[in-house]
Amino acid sequence: MRPMTSATVAPPAPLKQDAGVIGLVGLAHMVSHFSQLILPPLFPWLKDALGVSYTQLGFLMTIFFVVSCGVQTASGFLVDRFGPRPILFGGLALVAVAAFGYAAAPNYGALALLAVVAGMGNGVFHPADYTLLNRKVSPRRLGHAYSVHGITGSLGWALGPAVVVPLAIAFHWRVALAAAGAIATAVLVVLWLRRATLELQPVPRAAGAGAAAEAGNLAFLRIPAVWMCFAFFFLNAGVLTGVQTFAPMAARHLLDMPLALVAVCVTSYMVCSAGGVFVGGFLASDPARCERVVAAGFGVAALFALAIGFGAVPGAVVPVLFGAMGFASGIASPSRDLLVKRSTPENATGRVYGVVYSGLDVGQAIAPLVFGALMDQGRFRGVWLVLVTLQLLLVASAFNVRRARRTALAPA
Figure 1 (cartoon, one colour):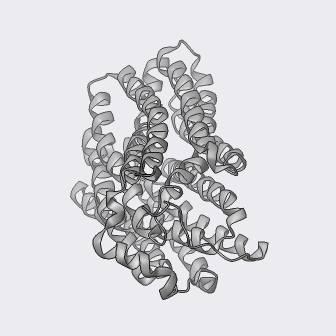
Figure 2 (cartoon, helix red, strand yellow):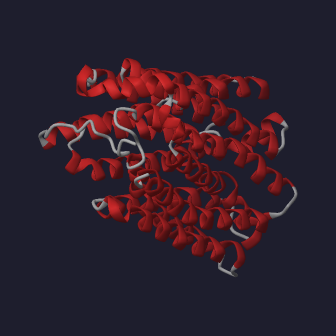
């Protein structure tokens, strides 16, 4: 079997050129994560305005991520076929349309339909982003490119509650969602004006001949490490969904935390996660230790989750513990991306990232139903038990990816 590394190596490039690609891709990635957290922080308002349950609201996110999963897998093939730039622009446009539609939605059914549109937009980002980074950024800066990509994603998650909650309090939840649409539109305009930076030449025929054969028979789907990566991201999605949507409210019920601190918990987690991703970018400079870094990060995060869910801590300390949990998880993020890169056949970047990162969408489609049901039943400690369990499973899953990759590379 061909060694599972990306053989298409970007030629050496000036720092300014690499920084331009990394910055624009990161900006787009920020919008992807931002779009995922414009509805959940508004659940208290939507619950009252629409007369629905937390489970029904969680189902909106299930719709979003089910659609995103299907689109992400398909868009990986489109990225390899037509290039990442037009696919990325289309995704940004759909996210903007969905946000403006949310703001004008008259009822729950309309929100559900718009969640389909938003999911379609969200599904294109990972295949397009990683194809651009892997093929346009110099190899020696790739670890830092992944770090910036992760940081901007975390900042997008932090920006969602930070934008929509104050606007909903000061004005109306519809105003908050319209502002979200304006942000997505502004980023699309910036990328369009700098579109030459994101131009990607087709793979030369000689270098891409093997990839063309793989595209025809889907050989990469037979690589065990690809599916181990899928499982890893599935578990990771459960952690993210719990933290972003229901864990802060569960902590409030368990620890008598003031309502004003609920949104602060999510922002604290995401901002500190961005700091952890920055540190993790340096640790990712040595690909050989990526599994150990991932395991250590999520193992420490599980300890902080245990403290919140099962310890007697003051309510005012909870946002600090969320931040510590986010920092530990963030350290693992660049090494997590290296797990995928080291398991990717040459010239199949879009397809592999599309399939692997669809694990995030599948997990984020299922997790809101699980956490929402626990919340409706008043099983707030159960929310935290699920979070801790998922984080510990991530530790084991990282080493399973390495074992699957080494088995595939072992001589027959």
